[in-house]
Length: 331
Image (cartoon, rainbow, N blue to C red; front, side, top):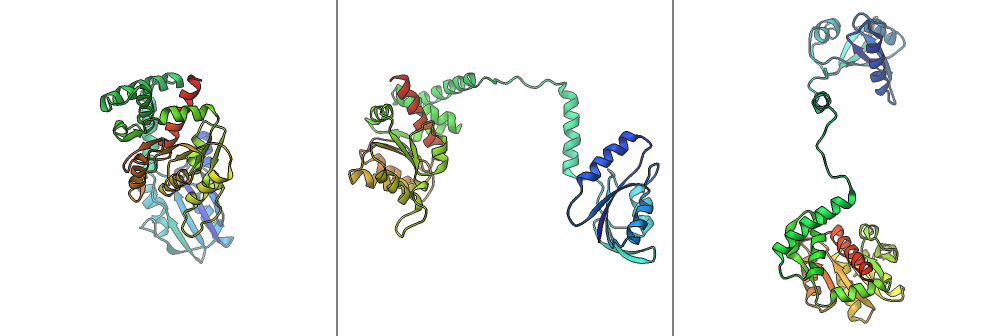
């Protein structure tokens, strides 16, 4: 049988006892019992608790030392009195004529968690309830951030028109990376095509759930809901995207933020005559991603692309959602 004795220094103050009782209760778990005991001033005394546990058949006992440092109470009064000189090692001793194993935990001062807790209490004292003043209004945060991102884009990409500058700024804002503007591409007619499709309630077909979840758009479908298993020659996202496009009527927009194979499949579907108005392509990676995105750039298909190895689902979502904003602003 196993038990834990939480040993404290002891105190005549009830507040101390209440605090340590709460600590002891927090240690309860399966497979062992927990008892709170004290070295002096308070009841029960750990020595009597140890004897009682041994009489009741407990043969593996952990002394959880609720002490900060390795002082005399730890090494002389408690562990030392039982002939134990090393902490954090099981040792067999004799108690009440019976052989039992005991284990002493280290005191708490060398624990990084305890040090952190104490430091936070110190910092709380100096804070005086006052922290730095941050902007908390969501609209102001977005307005300021987009203003900064727009200026960064204008500096990096003076070739972009107003609409594409806005989309690129959204990418910079979303990623926190001004460099992303250098990798943004949109085909010549992509904006006009996309806005018209959005005003016509286009079905947005995404490659993965993360993209679908991020779109602020009700008319959407995810490839992964259409392909429950892989078929030879297809990834799940590629097969699912094909099924999502071919199983639904009307015009679609394909939004790919993760899977290059889904993007390649989308281009195949366009060339097979499927009604795909435009493609948003931001899959990241070092295998296939860059090559497939460059194929899209050179295909003539209306598209919005983050070129190179850059990308991610959040960027695909940012582009599509910005198009949605613009579509309804100018409707």
